[in-house]
Amino acid sequence: MTDIPDDNTTATPASEAPGLVALTEWASDLDKNDKAPLAVLTVSTEPSYLSFFTEQGADVTTHYLEQTETWSGGYAHCLGHDCPGCKAQINRKRFVLLPVADLTDGVVKILRVPAEKGPGKLLTEILKVLMLSSRAQIITKISRTMKYQYVVEPHREEALNPDIAVAIKRFVEQLETGVIDLRSVVTSMPAAEMLEHERIAKRLELEGQTR
Image (cartoon, rainbow, N blue to C red; front, top):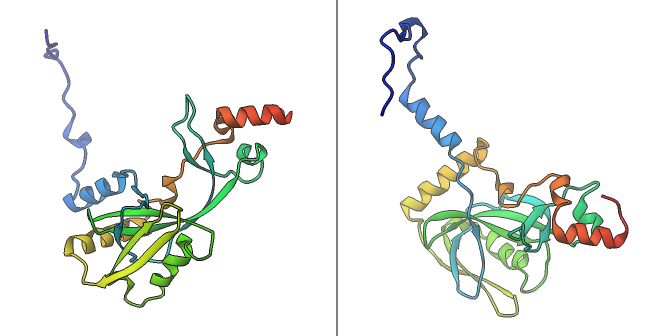
């Protein structure tokens, strides 16, 4: 049975009632608190069609932690000094996390661009498009071969779909105000938690290092 409040329940005095709020400010606060996870674009043999609307990204150094019984697998931020991943001699990988507009679904996603340079390397191939003055209006076709050689082609120049232009503008505004953190697509964990990863723990044990 639903409880019924006592008749002598005291109502909140008008002087203590919460103040009014402007709808525009309220909507803005909702946007600031709406931190949906960013999507990572995975380049495959199936082409993706992108707009490189910016050359600004986040420089990160990571360790790839393999899947275990308690870890789903993925990149984690290197912690620098006294990093358990470094102590366990797990390779470090450096990326630039670059925002791109996926023209297939109209979503701004994050492209992990490894630091390696050379023919067929993603960084080198993307730079060819970024050097073009009209890169934002260029539909860029990107894919990789079975041997992990990347192909980045300026497909054709075309004005952005208005919905995509709005999505890019909104993304840039949220990025500039700190609502979006590009580095959030890489897992952050304290050293104590990283030490619990089975592969790190085992390698440190075999190295004879105390935790």
